[in-house]
Length: 264
Image (cartoon, rainbow, N blue to C red):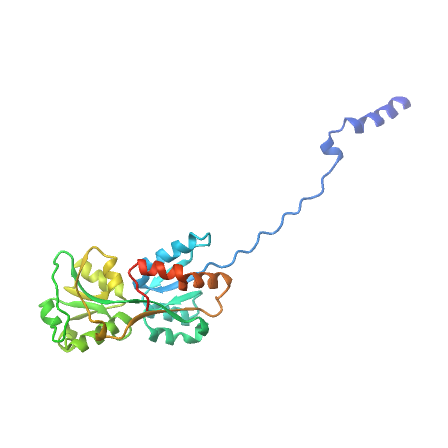
């Protein structure tokens, strides 16, 4: 019996599965790398198509596509002042850029594109207007109304008022104005036929098949339309700076030009 017990004691370890005889050391799984926050681009509504094209162009360079936040410049500026996590801000005029200057990286600010101011009518009722001194916008819309951004705070409305004052048309036309919160809202009024005419940017008219360009305002009738861009302080990380370099560099400018936005 003693010999049998010793024999079994010698044979059992050899018969045990290898998995039971050798316990592997625990595998250490590295913690996942923390991804940087996405670049958040806050841009004026009139840049909707252009910024979509820029974002696609940037993504084509194997970089993460920026998150686009597109709205009226005043709304975006107020959000940034309230602490919104914008990485880059593009305004439709310099006054609103000045308003958020305390939130920006000052050295980054630059104008990236220009635009033109146009008068549009519903495509279903196309007609032309001679936008020269003496133009009568009130007579042009007749019993109807015309629209643009609210001149009190919306950039396109400010440009529109300046242009119409220059042509001598503002005083008679002002009572028939439907004030919109942003240029895309004004465009929609004309598209639906709720307004007989509208003053918008050329880039907005280009993006719609439901409006007809009745005329282009003389460049001398208003201040040059420019889009200033800047990095937002506190969110200007490496990803934001890389995207900003693309946006303001040759490739970004080429995309903007292809979208109907000339150099400033």
